[in-house]
Length: 387
Length: 171
Image (cartoon, rainbow over all chains, first blue to last red; front, side, top):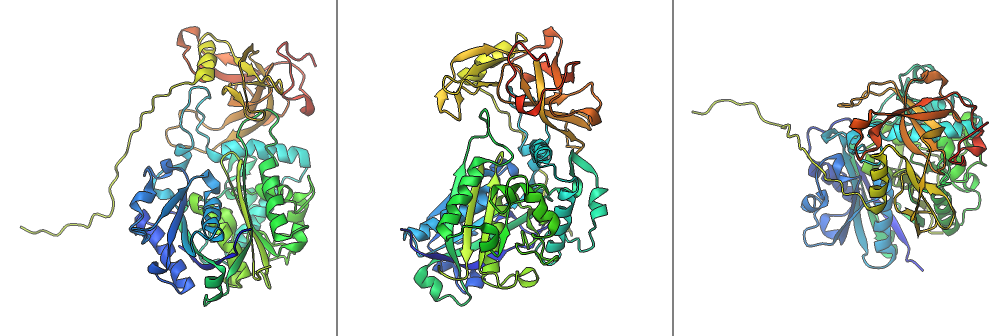
């Protein structure tokens, strides 16, 4: 049986296209220092550092964790790097949590980052290999056909993605850290935006951001002494599946369903829409909201888009289960950090510390990340109470 | 001799990385056949599904795939996207179609280009065939196939996509 652990400090940077004023080291230190300040702690209070980022090709710095030890105050302390592609921010938080839940450490710092302005992720994702043709189409080129298949199966109206794109940008306008600030966005503006990867339009895709996110995770006794309310970690789960096997269900991957079932069981959740107060879910392309609503059990198969269209996931429409109140990946996408931002924003909600995007009275929240070819999943449930 | 200089805040330092690709045993067999203008797959002894391109094992069953199967160069569109995004140094001019294609005789799709088609008329279940480069240009590479183009055959119903025998589809 795992020990109780909680998030006691959260730090983020302002997400933006290019942080020309800091190096990668400066970026991660800023997030880490913000997390320590939030926790009322100093560098000496940290026993170990768990760091994550997307593949090294994204900045062209190989094993950057080695050079970041100084910036993260962990000379002479254990440091561990986590690699799980786009889901890495979530997995990194889970690995950090496990080091406290297991009793190995009492208090750890976890950090995830991406400085996309230093390279071209689209290029980094398209390395040529002789057994497949070199198409250079980026992540959108991979996911758009899967979205098309979801649209065919669910018979969802064409504008579900447009609705998600507007909803998340309106959420992001409440969050001063969000990269895209589009308080006046309209359905028409999204619909008329350039078709990038049919059926995905420009405004239905995430931006490319620089940013870092950090959390301090502490054991039960230390969390109870924390100056601000802790976010108690109530469930943790990771699952993965191979990218390619015959008959693979790509629209609603089994690994995602299994991961959700595991984390819900730990947190005592039987009906996620009813039992959770909000969710921060990795939605880099608009249509992934209805797809994950189904994969995560908030709606029956083929019905996820109805929740979106009813406004159930919208703060502004008073929905019963707001998704991505922070604006989500559609507003800010420092790839390696994006998963940790979901986990941290879920924690902010149950700490009652989410500012203008606070879901009123949130007590239980889901943080979710996915990566690779929708094959790596990590999730946690955090609560304002221990159980 | 001190003179005022602008502070240097950044430099551009392009890096060039050359990778030497070493094919494993399954891709080596596959690429040797592609060099001769033949598409092949490998059959899983457990689930009997045929993989193309083969990776040497079936990820679902965890079994090695030894049996080589010659496939058709006709295929069915499982899904697709029309790419309009300009990407630096991309030799292919957008808009172009990337399709998930299942070749006849295989049970899993690969991604390739579609051309000689009206983009707006491309659809799931559509039948296509490979257009190969001239034989003297064939190499150990999947882009021996320049692209796939539509052929005059009836659409494959969605629930049959991925199950076509190597002998093809009569409709």
